[in-house]
Structures are given as structure tokens and as C-alpha cells.
Amino acid sequence: MTRKNMHINKRINFVIERRFPSFYEEIENVLDQAVDKYQTQNIRDPRIISYIISKCDTDTAVLVSRENDVDLLNDKDKISKDEKINKYLEIFEEYESRIHSFSSEELNAAYKEEKKLEENENLREMMAWDERQEFSDPMASADFDTWLSMATWTVDEAVSLSLAKEPGTVDRSSGFYKFSLKTGSPFISEYEKRTDQLSRAIKAQDLDKPLRPEAVMAWFQGQGMQGAFGGRVHHIARYDEEVEVLRRENERLKRLVTSPEKLETNSVLGLYRLCLGMAICRYEYRTDMRNGAAKSIAGEFAEVGLSITDDTVRKHLQRASKELGFEWKTRSPFEVRSKLRAKPKSD
Image (cartoon, rainbow, N blue to C red; front, top):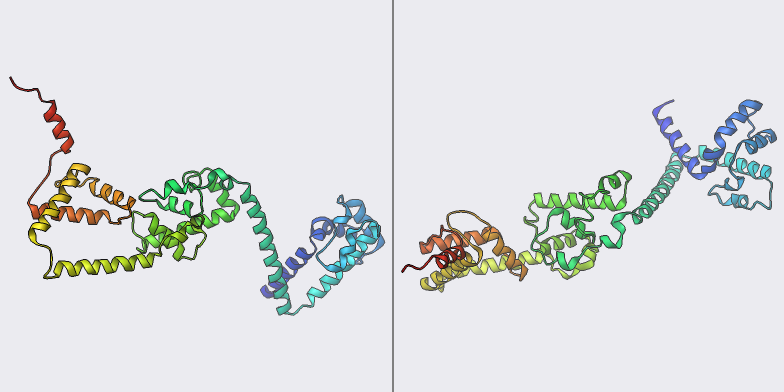
């Protein structure tokens, strides 16, 4: 048999099995035994029918196909078991003969139709399975009030929230995750897909790290995931629009710096003193080492809607230190004051 014939026979068998599942599940093996026993190819021989009835445990009412002309097989009162099986085998033979006469185009069309129906059935089964799992429990729903107030998200947190699920309860570290991944769960498959898409966007520098909630939500909206984040993404400005606003603001600031009307030196130095002083006193900034001050400043700015990166904060503080010729290498000013207060007074 050529590979082409094997391919065709495989498709024929698939279509017939889909149309007559009861035949392959209940009758085929028993029928082969009966044919060998009675040495006849007439599968509707009364002896064959009797043999099938004696060997099959399943009620013959299940012997139905999706062909409209066998609906009567569901009505047990109208025909006997013998008549029912005989009619079933008659219809089976007719369909088998018909499909073997199909052209390549007709066979491909029948195969694609059955394949699509099978995929839809499997999907419905898996969606029903998903609904019974831990990640579908209402307790697994995301607490958006809490998460939207945070300065940054991880990739896992962003993906879980995009699916309206609580990070930590529903993510790749969850106990059920690996098991569900093997089952073909539609929810877990979507989680994997979004994780891959987001990771690639970060690698391509479409998104900056650390991930800011507003930027991530806008990015998901830009991917056409309108239902992401429980619909809350609709309230976030599009990312490309935000970029354009920032670009225009950047151009304006460049013109201001290079303009003859730029700020007087004393005013600039005053602003440097103000920024550097607050960074030291409030965030324990030091000029001789890198600590978390710049990150803390950027995080608190984000909470009030003023977006700025850690690197930008750090760059301006370093420039202020340089322009003022001022260095702060000691401990927190609070520690210094506390130690001074704790010194015993001399007589």
C-alpha cells in the first residue's frame, strides 16, 4: 500500500468512526468473531445479528449515528433488537460504500468537518474541566484595588492579573499548574501564551523593566486583549499615546535648556539643593555609593501619577551633587542627629 493510499484510508476510517462511534466501540470485534464463526461476509445474516445481541452488553438503543435516517433507532418500542441492529448495519454499509466512492475533494471536506467537530467537543470538555478547577474558584479572583496601587509588577503577576486572577494563588508556582498544563487546559494554555508574548515584548524593549502597571495594561490593550484585567484596561490610555505625550514634553524641555531664556544659574543651583537635600533627608541618599534611594523616589512618584525611571532620578541627583560640589558619605541624617542627642552633656 502506498503512503497516499494509507493517508486516504486513515481519513476514511476517521470519518466513519466519527459517524458511527457505536460500531467501533461495541460491535466491530464481535462482528469479526461472528464472521469467522459462520464463514459469511453478509454482516446482516440473521445468525450474525443473533450473535451480536448475545455478546454485546450495551443496550442496543445506543446504536445510533449522526445520520438523520437512523433516528428511529432511538425508539425501542417500534422495532425489535434484531431489526434495530439489522437496520444499523444496513446504514453503516451504505455509508461505508458511499465514503469509499468519494472524490479526494469530498473526502477532505468530510474529514475537515469531522476534525473540527472533534476539536470543538474536546474544547467543550476541557472548558468544563477548567470550571471545576481551583483557578476558577471565585476566591481566586484578583484584588485589583490592591494590585493597581502597586508601583511595579513581575511578569507572572502581570499575566495572572490580565486573566483577572490573584497572583500567588494562580500562577506558574501554583501546585496545580504543572498538572493542568499536561491536560491541555484552555486556561493554562492561554496563561502560557500570554507569558510568552509578554516576555518577548520585554526582550524586544517594547516594555521597560521594572514593569509599571499602566504600561503593562496599555500593552495588553494594544495586543487586542480587550477583556484583559477584567475590562479595566479600557480606562488606561493607550501606550503609544503616552509615548507621544512624553516625546513632546521631552522636546519642550530640550528647547528650554538650550534656549536663551533658560533659568538663571542661582535658580538652578537652588533647585539642585532642594532635590539633593530631600533625597538625603527623606530617602537616605548617599553620593559615594548606590543604594535604593532612586528606586524609592521613582516608586513614590509613580503612586501619585508622576512617571520617572530610577536611572533618571539617579542621573539628576548625581548632577546636582557635581554642580554643587557637595558630597554626603555618612549615614542617615536621622542616625547622626540621634547620636548627637544621645551624647552626655559635659560639665
